[in-house]
Amino acid sequence: MSKYILVVDDQFSVRLFIQKALEQFGYEVKAVASGSECLCLATSLHRPSLILLDQSMPGMTGLQVLAQLAQDDLAKNIPVIMISGEEDLEVTARSFGVCDILSKPLDLEYFLKTVRATLEKETANF
Image (tube, rainbow, N blue to C red; front, side, top):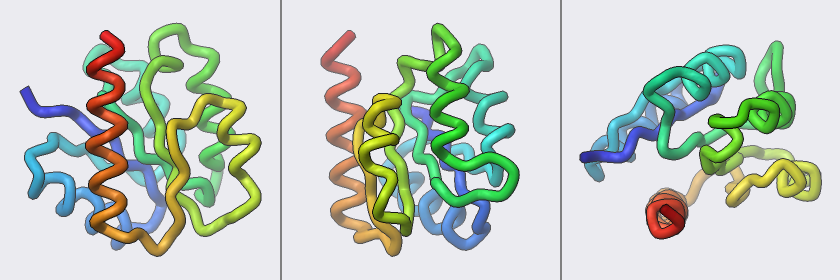
């Protein structure tokens, strides 16, 4: 069974790039443009195995999404990797339990290694 990864970024080109890269490695990917869409999917019956979350989005920032996820008993256990061009969010993001923070623009090889390692670590914990 392939791992289901939820990509959350308001920029279409970034979502498409990440989605295509992950699909090439056999992951099932859903890509959405907003924090509210992320929250709907993360709290649904078919929860993602991993969330890749942008920080800078209109309406709801990545940190605001993290705060909401932390309030849900099931969604709070979904690993999250933040993706951002901002440099000053690490302490706050880590306080919400973020697994990793990647900088934009993404280094594709490092990005894929980080995703794989995060999913393997979560699988080992079950």
